[in-house]
Amino acid sequence: MKKILCFAVFFTLVSYPMYAQSIQKEQWGTVKGKEVSLYTVTNKNGMKMQIMNLGCIITSLFVPDKNGKLDDVVLGFDNLEDYVKGHPSFGTTVGRYANRIKDAQFVMNDSVYKLTANEEGTAIHGGNEFRDAVWDAEIVSNENGEGLRFHYLSPDGSFGFPGKLDVYATYLLNDDNAIYVTFEAETDKDTHVSMTNHSYFNLNGAKELIYDHRVLVDADTYTEFDEDITPTGKLPRLKETAWDLSSMTRLGDKIHDIPLNGYHHCYVLNKEDGEMKKAAEVIEPNSGRKLEVFTTQPGITVYASNGLDNITGKYGIDYIPHMALCLETQDLPDAVNHPNFPSTLLKPGETYSETVVYDFGIVK
Image 1 (cartoon, rainbow, N blue to C red):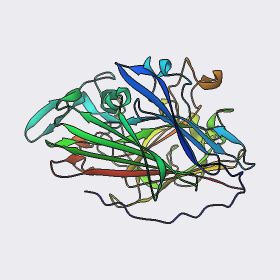
Image 2 (tube, rainbow, N blue to C red; image 1 turned 45 degrees about the horizontal axis):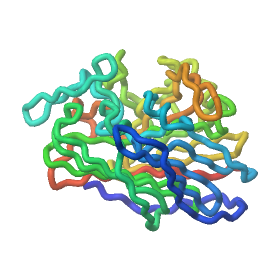
Image 3 (cartoon, rainbow, N blue to C red; image 1 turned 120 degrees about the vertical axis):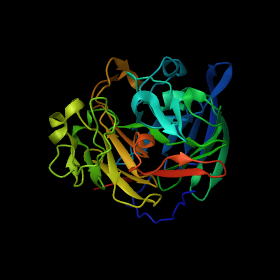
């Protein structure tokens, strides 16, 4: 079991109107005969996280700017039907296995496990199993905030993965404008697990593309990938590449020089496996919003929504390439096939436990 370390974060002091902290629930519809509810979690600053039990999807995130004005800083839809039709994992909890597994298979204990291939022979995001599942939900609170704890039981053999996997995903909002996300899982057979949240962030409220966003990722190497966007097993250095984010970088300066139409790389974080540490920082200078991402996980995939096309989202906004930025903290992609990567193996009697913190603040 990976231990989660406590840490202190210091915030810029900003004066906000005072709100009553609350959690509200409304029925959004049904999927596969199960009730889907939308929960609105509000802190004392008025920041709101809206999340539903279909896929544990963050549907909206209203965050104050430098003047205290709230804007929705994540992409998504304003109705359940559009989520059910299918989407590029807007705001979803991803599992069993985040990112790609080459040829949709892996070998474990001398057995070959064939997975459900859902992208040109590759298994991506666990076949979207967690995204499309209706999870059980309960309202919870602890020292990290108030919010929801979701539960899902993935059957043995689901999408080709061995073991019955008992999964929890907890999303908490606190009065420091930080969201704590904890993923936990236990299995009855040897299996592999890597979970993430797949929110698409735009800190200017999707009024403009992300070119003015400044991004820093604490990584010196990345997972090299082949033509199928799956790792080769090599971890080359980022220095002198167009996708190097080891110093604060305006995204628009290099994004058009990168293959695949922009950032789509998994960065290997400069930290010990299981250590809670800041992975990335994003600043949007016009709004003054800042997002710091902390995680216990070894990698973070930075994806500049290069493939968005022909999608109309909330507020009638047409989503196009470079509309948002995904910051997917995770184990390294395809680690099941690369023994030199940190292991994603989970055995009976062990607990998979990983945490990511999305900490919102203001820069002047």
